[in-house]
Image 1: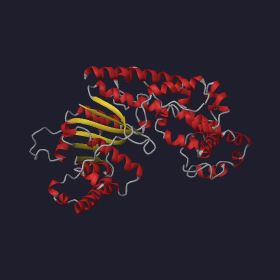
Image 2: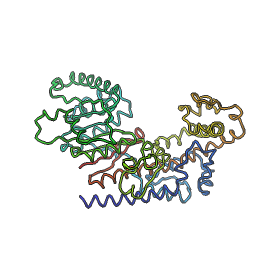
Image 3: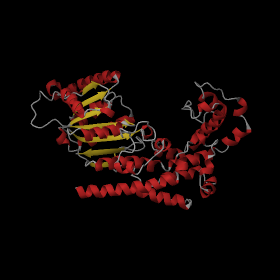
Image 4: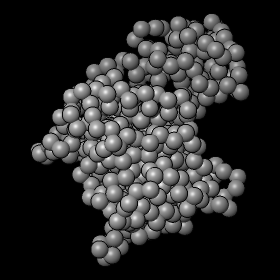
Length: 468
C-alpha cells in the first residue's frame, strides 16, 4: 500500500511539473481576458503560425480543438504546436468523460430505489443528477468505519442530506449559516417524511427514523478547534446517550463547496481523528486564496496550492486561469457546432470594453448586464442594455464609429481566440485537482479522483474521495 502511494505521488508530481511548463509557455494566452481582446490586441498574442492558420479556419472546425481525449477522425491541419499540445493533454489531463455505467443491482432495502420520484420532486435536472449520483456513490463506499454518519458543512436547503438520510439510511448532521435555509430544510424534511410514511409502513415508526440534524452555525474553518467541533457533533447526534460498542466516527461530504471551503474541509478531515472519510465535488477555483492574494501568509492556510510539493516549487495559477478552469467546455463545444452566431456576444463585450476603458478607466472589467443574445439585438441595443445600472452612457458616435465597426467585423477572431484559450481549461483544472490529491497522499491518506457527473449536466464533475 505504501509503495503504491509513493508511486502515485511521483506520477502526480511529474504530471504537475509538465503541466506547469505548458502553462508558463502559454501564459500570455491563458491569462488573457476576452473582454480586453481589442484594446490589448490579444490576436497578436498568438504565435505567428497560429494566426496564419486560424485566420482562414471556419468556426465550424474549432470544436476539434476542445476534443483532445480521443484522436479526431477529422483532417484538420493544425500548427505543429497545437498537435503537440493535444498529445500532451491526452497524457496529462484527467479525463472528463463519465465511464459507461455498469449495471449495479439496486438494493430494495434502500428507500430511494423504491420511491425515487418523491426525492426528485421540485428539484431541477442538474441538481437532481448531482444529488442522485453523489448519494449512490456514497452508498457504495465501505463506510462502516464511520458508522454511516456524515457531516455536510454548507448544506443549504438540505436536498443532498434528505436523499442520503431518508433514501440510503445515513445519519446526517448539516451545518448551515443561513437561518432561512435551515427553516426550509426542516420543512422539506417533514414533507418528505410524511409522504414516505404514507407509502412505507415502517416509516410510521418515528422512533427508528434517522432525521437529518440541522444546525444553524457558521463554522470558522480557518481557526477551527477539532476537539470542540467533534464534541458539537457528538451533542447533535446524542452520542453520549447512545450505547455504542464503537467510538464516535464520521465522514465529511461536500457537493460543490465553493472556493476555500473545499481546502478547509480537507484540512478538517486530516485534523479530526474521528473523521475517517471525506468526499468532495469542488467548484469556483477562482475564489481560492493564494499566497499572492493575501497579505498575511504566516498562517500558511491559503487555498492554493495545498501540497507541500507545489508550495515548495512555488506553483502559481492566476485568477484568470482559475476562472477559465470553471467554464463549461462541453457545452461551448456544442455551440461552436451549431449556434455559433450567438458567440458574437464575445465581440460585443470586447468592443464595448474598448469604449468604456477610454471614457471611464475606473469601470474597467465592470460587471455588465448578462443574458443578452447577439442574435436578437444589434450592437447599439446591446450597449444600451448592457450598461443599465452603471453610471455611464455609451455615446452614439462611439457605437457607430468606423473603429467600432471594424472591431465588430472581427468577431470571428474573438471566438477563435476564446476557443484557443479554452483549450487549456481542462489542464488548469487538472493541476488544481492533482495538487489536492497529492496533498492528501502526502499526509498519509488513501485518496482517488473519479468522474462522477455527466459533464454536459454538471461541468465540475470530478469527485475526490479519501480515507484514513
